Amino acid sequence: MAKRSPPGSSLEIDPDDILDVKSLRDQLTPRDSPFVKDNNSGGGFVGDKDVMALEVSRYESDESSGAGCVGIYNSVDGTCMPLPPWARRAGPRKTIYHDPRNVTAAVVTCGGLCPGLNDVIQNIVFTLLDYGVQEDAIFGIKYGLRGFYSRNAKPVELNAHAVEGIHLRGGTILGTSRGGADIKEIVRRLSLWGVNMLFVVGGNGGNAAANAIQMECEEQKVLCTVVGVPKSIDNDILLIDKCFGFDTAVEEAQHALLAAKVEASSASNGVGLVRLMGRQSGFIAMQASMASGVVDVCLIPEIDFQEDKLMACIEKILGRKGHAVVCVAEGAGQTLLANSDSHVTDASGNPILADIGIFLRDRIKKLIKDADVKLIDPSYLIRAVPTNPNDRIYCKILGQGAVHGAFAGFTGFTVGLVNTHYVYLPIPVIIQAARTVDPKGRSWNRLKTAINQPDLHD
Image (cartoon, rainbow, N blue to C red; front, side):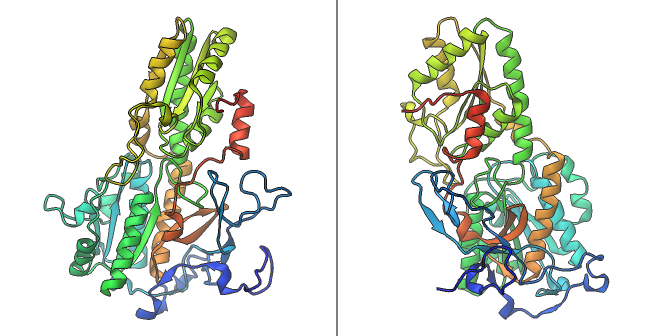
């Protein structure tokens, strides 16, 4: 086995130590980037030997938070899937492998709504145009992947005028849907339409579809670069620091928690109960609870809780303060619900969940005398808003990075922020499982400490 160079080493990095992405370079013709003339506006270029460390920390003990795991840590069973220590840096290359004049590009958005979809679409289009792609050669696929072959959803032209100002709106101008991925038919359409760059903006399901499209293109010898942009309002995509829209979601979610505080504190024995997004991962609930400073109990999918312990905790808080605020992620407590069936999934393969918010509202009313419960579910309000400034900047960089990677001749990759740096990651790595909150990690511990939440599980 090759000796691995430690992060920060000036030694030459062994190629086996790089989490590499697929390439079409051997089938394409190299040429100078159109940005060479001014050295990319004075900013220079990213080299193929530029890499970023996937892990930046070392711990004395490996008893918590996956310490010592160079790879993907599974907080459920404590296992670690080893990965090479480096990933390729994202950004513009001096040498490109597509002639911008001959590029036909398509953009599609998949899955549920998320703040930032329009921002990403806009910046993919703007960056393609900056490279010199013709304005009539960029298309948007309507209503998700089924738009490739639906008679009721014809592709639309994405020129500078079409995307001007769309970042100020929520949702996606292209529309979206779940499922509907007839991969062979999609690849047939890519070939028929002469599309040689495809940008898929989606979550785990959307990126899995992008990976399947790339593999089918390879099988059918269709020369098309396939690029994923990771979208997950739940922030549950492996390796990536955060997904676009997550910061906005946390900001909006805390408004609901603050409203719950007002409602609860304005009633005798008031309980403000807020149900937030988070099927398998409780990042929004955890971060919004921490940010708001008003939550007394936070429940997430990663940690089971006992009903009797929860009720005792709420009663204690009511006795002390006269009111309580409870934040629950939608995937929490599913084992308590009689009609919950984790094997039933939607069109994207996501588990269909029973409503934990309604369940807890009814149980609190039944089991805690004189409890006045106000249930707030802001999920669709949160999904539909435009991005905040942090997410808006992030989306710009992701859109630019996706196009830079496509022109660099890479395919079957996604672009994201890892350890505060932008990198290209092979799609198969990030879609293996959902990223989850570590029950033994520092982030969860900080929240429990901040709100004095007792253990509610066995």
